[in-house]
Length: 203
Image 1 (tube, rainbow, N blue to C red):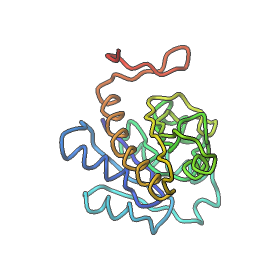
Image 2: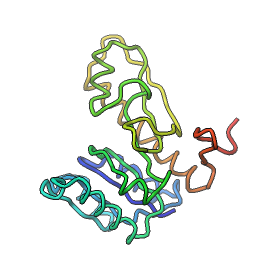
Image 3: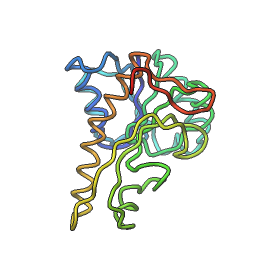
C-alpha cells in the first residue's frame, strides 16, 4: 500500500509508521511526506528514512484552496493510494478529499464524537472525564465526523497530570495507527452503504 503522510509537528506518528514498515509489521511504502510547517521536526524523520518530503509555508496556506490543490497534486504524482493525517493541524478541503475519496485517514486524540477539535486532550482533561482515548477515522468535509475505523480507550488515573495523559495518549496512537494501516493494506476495511466502517475478520 502506497501512502502519503501529512504532518505539522514532531512527526512521532510518522515515525511509528516508518518503524512498523521497517519491522515488517506493515506492508506499505510512504511515498511522500508533506508538512504544513517548514520547521516541523517530522521532516527530519522523513529525511533520515529517505522519504521524499515537501514543506509548505505560511504564505502557501494564505490561499487554502490553492494549498489543498497543491497537496492533492503532489500526492497523486507520488502515487499515493491513501493519505494519513498524522498530527496534521489543518483541515483538508474538497480538493484533497475528492481526489482521495474515502482514502484520507485522520488520527484524533479523543473518543469521537466527544471532544472534537484541536485541543481534544486538554478538553477531556479539563472536563474531568474518567475515560478518554483515541479515534482513527476516514476524514470528510465535516470536522472530526467521518466514519470511524477504530477506537481505543484509556482510563485517566486519579491525580494524573495533563503531561502524563498526553504522553500515554501518544503512546496509544503509536500502537493503533500501524494496526489500522495494516488492516487497510490487507484490504479488510470497507465503508458500507450505511456509511459505517466494516472490518473483515473481526468477531
